[in-house]
Image (cartoon, rainbow, N blue to C red; front, side):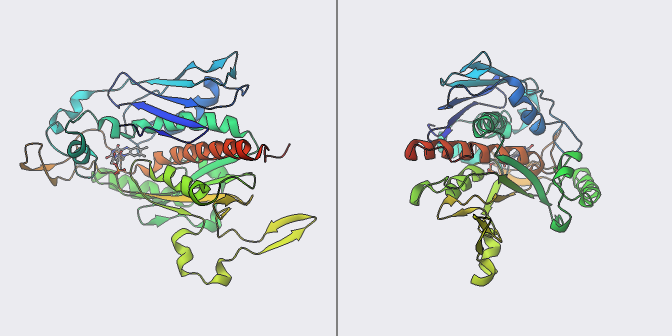
Amino acid sequence: MSDNSFGHLFRVTTWGESHGPAIGCVVDGCPPRIALSEADIQPWLDQRRPGQSKFTTQRQEPDTVEILSGVFEGKTTGTPISLLIRNVDQRSRDYGDIAERYRPGHADVAYDLKYGIRDYRGGGRSSARETAMRVAAGAVARQVLGAGVRIRGALVQVGTHAVDRARWDWDAVGDNPFFCPDPQMVPVWEEYLGAVRKAGSSVGAVVEIMAEGVPPGLGAPIYGKLDSDLAMALMSINAVKGVEIGDGFAAAALTGEENADPMRMEDGRLVFDANHAGGVLGGISTGQPLVARFAVKPTSSILTPVPSVTRSRENVAVSTRGRHDPCVGIRAVPVGEAMMACVLADHLLRHRGQTGHDPRPA
Ligand SMILES: Cc1cc2nc3c(=O)[nH]c(=O)nc-3n(C[C@H](O)[C@H](O)[C@H](O)COP(=O)(O)O)c2cc1C
């Protein structure tokens, strides 16, 4: 596989498996003289960390990040930044009984058909453990972008229960185990997911990511569109089955009048009166908030047996015993934020590289 990297000038490569000794990433292209220490990265990893509530997997991983290279006296040097997280809670034996069986909904069968070898320990490279390194790289990207660009994410739907957007409160997102922006939806999700978990089942979710303070001009025509890079980045997250920018699929049901984002001048500034486009026109940021959503499928590992086959092509039924996560969409929120940060940092550097100018306010 040579497809473990993304980004052009801010280039992230991740490596490792869920049951190896460690996972890691290399961030290449980060500009020099940017403040960076483990303390800038760890808080973001702590948000994604498993075992924090009964609604996420009970795997206990401290996910402590170590900076191995690229930083000297608290500043980036312009050389590759290598980040490492040691795997602590490996427990390969939990997976022994599925060594020969393909887990429905997982990458097991597809990897084996492609590579002809199978690391059955927790999904190997396809495990979402890899997303911890995306979050670590995202923290570096945030340092590159600076405090003027604010990237936040929220869970907006769990199963059939969507938040009421009229009650949206960003301050509430950190106060509940779901990253839920609607305080009244929290008890509903609690009861709903509690029942789903008890039944050994799972449900999907929708995550929304917003970046404010994105300067206009990021992204490039045709094959370097900001929205297409963002869609790729979000779609590459495990279990993501759909990505929307701005109004997304709902735009298909709007008229041109409803969908247009009117513009006007106010105090010498260009102002938009709506943001159906999600902050991007022609693949280039407009200065409006960049808004993306993605749909996460229900956790594949469930207690109910599902028909499957073995490596030796016998029919079996596969169910998951032990640790189980009723909605992986919850832990996907920090991952989505990180992918947005990496794409924006890459496009900021690309914009500077091509135009020679930094679009951020001085
Ligand atoms: C943060 C995160 C955690 C995940 N944890 C689990 C899990 O505990 N159990 C599971 O069945 N799938 C989990 N997944 C999803 C699987 O990794 C994913 O469905 C699988 O690798 C197949 O890939 P695909 O769904 O993208 O096709 C998780 C996804 C994310 C984003």
